[in-house]
Amino acid sequence: MNAADQVEPKGDLSLRTVAMPADTNPAGDIFGGWIMSLMDLAAGVAGGTRAKGRVATAAVSNLSFIQPVKVGDVVCVYTEIVRTGRTSVTLDVETWVLRRGQGQRTRVTAAEFVLVAVDENGRPRPLPAE
Picture: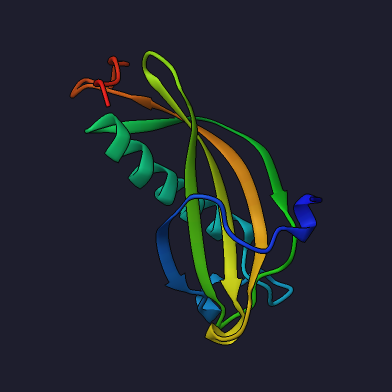
């Protein structure tokens, strides 16, 4: 199956919100940086749950903006852990929308996030056993 043909989100729903007029770019679409920040928040929720504590984003790769997001869309961010290392968690993060809060979900953004478990001083720490 082609990634564009994907009809169901991968992973767990980690964040959901509504796109508002204040979140737009000069073209009237939702600003990509706002979507990226939602994806980072969702990755932090999922990564922090797995790490049982604080995490920091170390890298974002393969970020693709597939379709625009419009004002009034319900924005849903899904996360799936795909790898763990000694101190890191790698997640696939996808953003899907319900146009005007209705109908079929549409995949609009996808990326891979790497988060590192950190201690109270911000230094990497080992992930706890699952």
